[in-house]
Amino acid sequence: MATRHGPIVTVALVLLLALVVLTGLNGALDASGNEGVPMPVIARGQGDSCVDDTEFIRRYHMSVLKRQHDETTLTGIPADKYSLKECVTCHAVKGSDGSIVTADSPQHFCRTCHDYAAVQIDCFDCHRSRWRRR
Image (cartoon, rainbow, N blue to C red):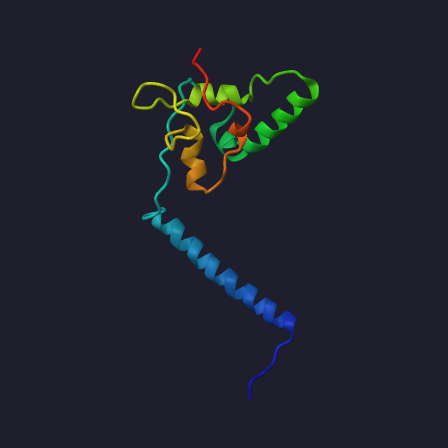
């Protein structure tokens, strides 16, 4: 005779099973050092250092850019440290013809990670995706 559990017990069992599976999977990935998982190759910037800590920028660049966009839009004062132009100027990638590629190109710096993570880049719907170097 089968035992019937209430919905709370069923959900708890499913969550417990998911936790066990994910914990084991996480340990397997950590132990393997991400072997077999292709990682994006990120081009190094042209400057001596980034405008902020590299790991901070990698994780929070979108929040920083959104905040800077809002501040610039509300105050009319253009960005300096966290401007999109500064990012593109330092991280511009040249194509085979020597000119800076646009965001339409898979070589574009931002697309390296955004394509990998399947995240759309909408900055360049309004902003130019390349600038001349200073």
